[in-house]
Length: 319
Length: 260
Picture 1 (tube, each protein chain N blue to C red):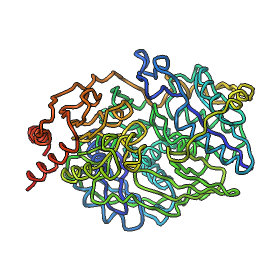
Picture 2 (picture 1 turned 135 degrees about the vertical axis):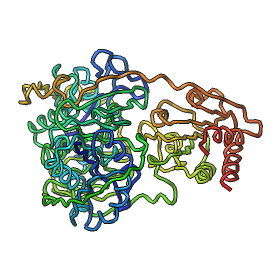
Picture 3 (picture 1 turned 30 degrees about the horizontal axis):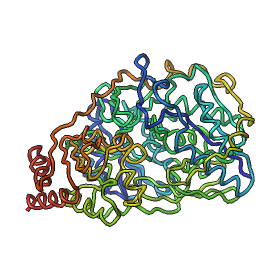
Picture 4 (picture 1 turned 45 degrees about the vertical axis):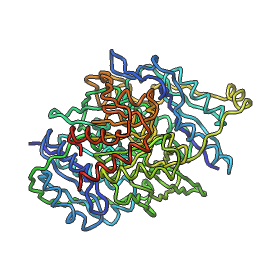
C-alpha cells in the first residue's frame, strides 16, 4: 500500500488533535506515515500517540533550526521524505501555518494543491465546503502528488494500531537569506478552555451580550460544557471580547458538534464561519433574528435568563 | 528608499451571495458585486505608511479580468503611485499554483524591496499565495503580520495566528502578508480619486510575462474541481419562547441529541 505522509502538528511535543484526524483521513488513501519536525527529542514524546492512530512509520526530522525559522524547515522535511517515499498524498492541517506549508510544498513537488478539505476519499479526491459552507465541492489533483490541507474538525479521529517504525531524516541547512528567523514566541494562553477551531463544542456571544463584563455569562456556560468561547464580529468590534476569538468570514471558521449562539443575530458574515456546525442552538430576544433560520433549536428569550439556567442544568447532569 | 509592490485582488463582496458557475465550476464573477478585498486596503495602507515614513514608490499588482481595474483604481486613489494589471483570458480557471507563478513572473519585471499581500483572500481563502511567492522567488516569508517595521534593509514582523504571536526577522527583499489588525485603512480623498485617474496602469498578458501558456488556465491547472453544488440551506428546527424554562428546554434537547 502506498504511503501517505502526515505532518504532525504539535507544540513542543504535545500533539494536537488535528494530527489524529489527519492520520485517520490518511488511512482512506493508503498507509499513514507521520512526519515529525521539531527540536531534538520531540519524536520520543509523540511516537506512542502517533502509533495509537495508525502511523506505520514515523519520519523524524529533528534539528536545533527546526523551531528557529518560519515554515521552511517543515517544507524541507516533507519534500525530503516525499522524494524518497513517493507518497500517494501529503496531508497537513489547514491552519494558518499548515496552509502555507502545503502551498510551498505543492510548488516544490509540482503537486496539486487542495485546500481546506473536510473529507478525503480513497481515490485521493477531497470534499471541500466553500463560501462559508454555501457550496460543496469535490476536487482532485490533476498533476503530481496531491498536497492536501485538512480542516481541523473536518474528519473524526478514530484510533487504530500502527507500528510507528522510526526513520531518521536529515534536514538540509537553512538558507538564512531565504527564510524568516523566529526571534521569539508568545503562545496563546487559552487557560483550560479548548482551542476554538479544535473544540467539539463552541459557545459564542454577540452584540446582545452588551458588555465585556457580561461576557462572563458566555464563559460560564462554555466552562460547564467544556467548550471553547467564540464571539461575533459585532461583539469584537464593540470591544466585548478579543479578536482572536472572532467566528465568521473574517475570523475563524468552526464546525463543532454543537454551536451555541447567545445574543447573535446571525448576519451572513457570522454564518459563514459556523453554519457547518453539526447542531446549532440559538438564544435571542428578537424572534426575527436570522440565526433562527439555521438553528436546530432556538429559544426566543433573554440570554441572561436562559444561559445561566442551562449552565446550571448542565452542571447538575455532570454531577 | 523602499520600493513596495502591493498585491491586490478583486473579489465578490462577502455581503452578496457568492456562487460558482454551473459550466466549469469557476467563480461566478457576474452574480455578485465586485470589490477590492477588504484586507488589501490594509495592505495598501501599510505600504503607504512605510513610504511616508521614508522614501520609495508603491506599485499595485493585480491579476484579474478587465473589470479588476476598479480595484486597482481604488488602491491608486488611496495613494499608490502606479499599477501593473495582468489581464489575459487564458488565465480563466487558473489554480493557486498557476496564479503564484504568474504573480512571481510579474514581480520579476519590477524592482522591489518588499511585497505586501493580504493574508488570505475572502473568496478562495487559500491563505498560501504569499508563502508560495516566497518559495518561487527564494525570499523570506514574513506572513500574517499584525505589526511590521522596516529599518534599513531589515524587517521585523509580529506574526499572529491561532498559535499566538511569533516574532520574525529577515533582510529585504522579502514577502509580507498582513492581517486585519495591522492598521485602519484611510479613505481616498477627492483629490486622490481625481489623481488616480491619471496614474499609469501597465497592462500585461501571459505572453508579456514569458509564462508558459501550458501552465495557466482551467485545463492546465494542477487541481481539478470534479463536482460543485450549492448546499441545501439549513432549515430551521424547533423554536420555543422562553417562559422561565428556556434553559431547561435547551438542556432537554441536548440530552435528546446525546450532546450532554
